[in-house]
Amino acid sequence: MTDNTYQICKTCVMDSSMPGTVFNQDGICNNCTEFPIKAAQHWRPNAEGAARLDKMLARIKSLGEGKDYDCILGLSGGVDSSYLAFKVREWGLRPLVLHVDAGWNTELAVANIRQVVEANGYDLVTEVVNWETMKDLQRAYLRSGVPNQDVPQDHVFIASLFHYARKYRIRAIISGHNFATESTPMRWQHPAMDRINLRDIHRAYGKSPLRDYRTVSALELFFLSPAVRQIKFYHPLNLIPYDKEDAVKFLESQGWRKYERKHGESIFTRLFQDYILPKKFGIDKRRAHLTSLIHSGSLTRERALSLLEVPPFDDSQIRREIEFFCRKIEISIEEFDRLMKENPRSHKDFANWDRYLALLQPLKNFFLHIRG
Ligand SMILES: [Zn+2]
View 1 (cartoon, helix red, strand yellow):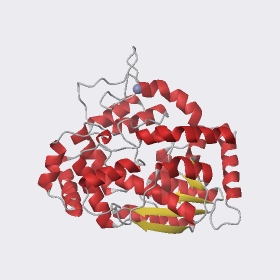
View 2 (cartoon, protein in one colour):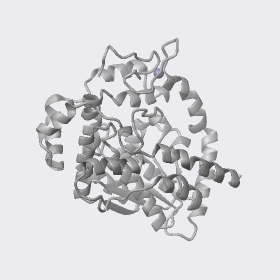
View 3 (cartoon, protein in one colour):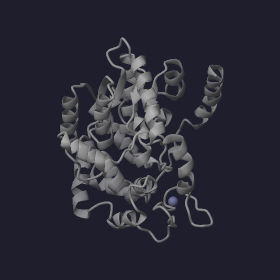
View 4 (tube, protein in one colour):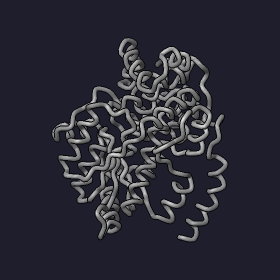
């Protein structure tokens, strides 16, 4: 949504609605000035990337010797993870494919997951999150008024990856996260992996215990898994040229079907990003997404500005989605509409991991030091 009160960057489409966006004297934002520095660290769609990819694949294969799988791959049915699933077979890896069903899959996502798994002959584990717990957690987040409403889905997704990695003694988690389309940080977004925050929000607004809902602690995430168990994330899409439109074309040739809208694989993520975020929090996440595409050269600023002219949601269509959502999590539409009008609250209004991470930092530094 365009709001004249916000300052907009001269070279991308980010504006001051996104907390943490600052501008230099030329009117250029920190996302633009920081991009080349971060790109040099993370993004190698070139010959150097190809050489690094070879090394990465050799390492993952050697870690998996004598085991059923050499890596684990989370599959949502979206473009990135589906495309990666095909690349992984092309690279000769032997993944365990994990899908976490948190209750919001679209029918098309389910069909696409089946297609990707069958086309590649993979073993698939589907982790179905207890719906009563999920529903309670989603209601708690909605009533708490914090901006990152996608935590209930995102946390259990990553926690499940760690769980199955340990269960099958897998040391490589292959992630479809990529710099080409996701380089712009979501500065408004408190990390989904903060279990202290998740538990406190649930304690304040939830009704039933967090049963059959996998979580992961900060100690596990930042220390035990990477340092002791040697389980690590790998981001191979950063080492190859990756263009989303080309990826979609390739996937379509393999029987996968395209989503009409971004995040077409999750009913909730779509409602969250298209409606709840702009309506309640004044944040149009498309700005971050389009800015990433401008930076990676997939889109011009003019084209991005024209895409932003279209409102993030269609009034008549969104009401039907809201009704579906309210029925599914069992709250009234009146309450939902009232919550949308209430003032947002901060994740920091609840217990969180900030102080704990500060304590953990010396441990991480010490370990990195002794490993040389
Ligand atoms: Zn900018």
